[in-house]
Length: 476
Ligand code: PA5
Image (cartoon, rainbow, N blue to C red; front, side, top):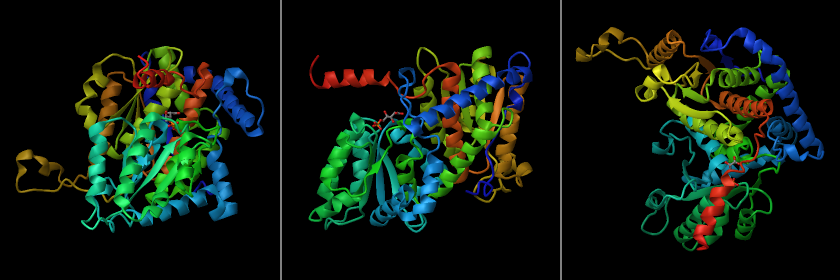
């Protein structure tokens, strides 16, 4: 793997070093041996999973299989090409992409948020509004089954039905259905409804139906049995030792990304490059350990129980929400765990900015900053209508305005002794985003080991499911 072919994601905590309200360099140095021990534990967990050793009950569930997954997938792709998992995903995705003009990802929680963040960060911001040609021949993408919202579901059915012509033919649409357990109610209901609608819209051509559905699920689940009965030939597995919110780099995220034509190999290479840094770099040069160290100390020593991830690009909002879920479900246990919050700036400077500047001192702000935008810089432009007084900055471009906003906000927070750290993303593309996913997943499990919380599993979520089921079955 050539991890030099793209720029690294970096972490800069220099604006956290504020006496009194932030951290001191010596506090970070003192924590370093514990961070290294937590990394060792994480790598020992992986070894346990890979060798099939018995997992002690205190460590169960242990879903550490995601850690070296990018490396394993890339190695298999290089040796077995089309027959490898990545090769199979690419060809199934291409097949579906050529057959349909729209596709729907059915899934909830870890089974859809990653795909959404890939869509928003790596595709054209108005992908679904573009012509097929402008979409480089790729289909439009929608999400459903992440709620039980009557109007939203029917709204999407309207959109899918809209492409039909009077003779019953029309733009075809397909489905990627994702559920590791294969028994979650929301996606199961959506699949049933959307399959029924698909059947109606296919008219006499029912043989197409199994070709229009790509399922991603655990073996022997209800969903697996249903799609096997349906005759789907391309069914993708979610390995047992990889949990929902850590599954973005399995077929869960890779299949929808590949249908959109994203470079899933670059995505995996980014993640593998982050793995290499995580395994070998010392604290102070290790983005994963440094991020955990700052977040942990700010929470433990400065009561910063709220972690605001401020993304300075509209396209990164869903990535922030993916991370909200990752952190909440992983560490929000035993009455502990920081509360994550995503802010999108400059938008939210006009909604949350006041509180972040002058509210309770219970927050650590981590900026996610793009070093480069994909498009040519757009200038403000001069105008004969200068009532807005913008001619003075007519030559300035949008990236320059963004940079002034970022630096101005950081300076204002520093003046108020508010700690901020920065994650720098070279670009909003597959290689950078792959690094960031892996960095944040690794950071979450390292922090779990550091503070003694099992980051895997989500026992609390079972309670609502149980009650909902008994209400629906009329038991109460
Ligand atoms: O992280 C998790 O494990 C959860 O958020 C799951 O992804 C979510 O509950 C959906 O579960 P499933 O994929 O089994 O339908």
